[in-house]
Amino acid sequence: MNKIQSSIISKIRSRESVIAILGLGYVGLPQAVLFADAGFPVVGIDVDQSKIDSIRNGKSYVQDVKSDHLANLVTSDKSDSASMSTQIHSTKPGKIYASTDYSIITKADVIVVCVPTPLSKTREPDISRIVSASQEMALYIHPDMLIIVESTTYPGTTKDVILPTIQSANHGPFKVGKDFFLAFSPERIDPGNSYRTISDIPKVIGGITPECTSVANILYQSVINEIVPVSSPTVAEMVKLLENTFRAANIGLINEFAIMCEKLEVDVWEVISAAETKPFGFMAFYPGPGLGGHCIPVDPQYLAWKLRTLSYNARFIQLADEVNHGMPDYVMERISKILNESGKTLLDAKVMVIGVTYKADLDDLRESPAIDLISLLKDRGSHVSYHDPFVTEIDIEGLSLYRAELNTLTLQQSDCIVITTAHSTYDWEWIVDNSKLVFDTRNATNGIRNPSSQVVKL
Ligand SMILES: NC(=O)c1ccc[n+]([C@@H]2O[C@H](COP(=O)([O-])OP(=O)(O)OC[C@H]3O[C@@H](n4cnc5c(N)ncnc54)[C@H](O)[C@@H]3O)[C@@H](O)[C@H]2O)c1
Image (tube, rainbow, N blue to C red; front, side):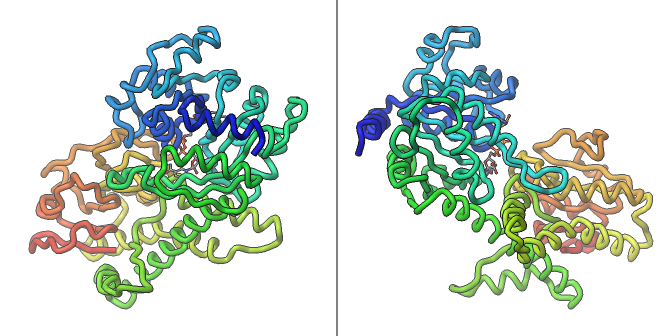
């Protein structure tokens, strides 16, 4: 172990290392809190000034981070024009200092990259935020640093994109694994899951060199219960893509199974419930109106794109994507069918959509299939309203749609109630009792019956 490595390790062990988190969203803000809770001084950097202001005021915009918890962690120095030494001075052990100013990295020891990795309009990887974050940090990094990438990306990004960007900065001799340390460690956070904290989720780490893995291990050992080292960043990148491709493919399979069950006039939910009694070799996935969130619909496309550059067609990913993307259309056709059976048509029908976020009990609308479904229904001439306890306004093709009241009158006036997200705060029995017709894509109404209302399940 060289001197630089042993000095960085001893700083981590004594909690003196200043941890810089780049990107303070759903992943970055909980990370900042995690390290501050463990006693590290934390600086959070984000390009979005409103997020910085919110953090400085102790107001969380991420559901899993409570405002009173954050407020206890933020430093009181709110001036961005403060000198660098004042800024770092204001970053005390166990405290978070948030800023849009990348130059604060000059005083940091560790950088954790949590910037977004969306798809472009043509559904190809858009790693522009990773590239710009790497270019910005390259201006300020110095020897003795550990850099960890947590953003999900295609295999090879850490080694082929981030490493050369860092090394291209003119820092004199700057050798990875000797002067600085670089690793990829996928974020496996489960938003909205309160029974499993970040510390309970094993952390996969792949460094560019064994020394990089070893330094990153020491950092995460201070906040995570179990570390899973792998042989390279590319393996670690593939681990994340396997996990999310596994989910996307299995959700695609069960969505197609739901379609097959409808054709066979079999209840897919009953089939799944009985199948999951098998104590081995089966894992239950559930159908729904489509696939949402920032990860599952997006990440497999990163892998498929990388494979296309190697002239290989990732068939499972393509098929699952096709099935999952087709679900809002399928749901719309089912709604059309049941309306027709009761003498109505989609044109002019009053349809109320219940739950628009992509996941139950979460406030995240990213890639939510409920939004696609609402667009499709509107295109077919339905009068669509929605209710969601977490969302007061949604954007449908550039137009705002505001949350409707959810009461006996609005339920009774609707020709069809469509359950798209099963938030636990809903009283499903009351919803069924007060509705004429319910189309349930989540089996939320399981076991609930009322002779005066018709419930049809996906
Ligand atoms: N949300 C999840 O559940 C989840 C889970 C695992 C992994 N991930 C991955 O983690 C990464 C971050 O996801 P997220 O959900 O936190 O995204 P997010 O959009 O919630 O947050 C990203 C933040 O980065 C900021 N940002 C953008 N460009 C920046 C730059 N150049 N420098 C500094 N900040 C910048 C944005 O303003 C935003 O606040 C993505 O790669 C995602 O795939 C997300």
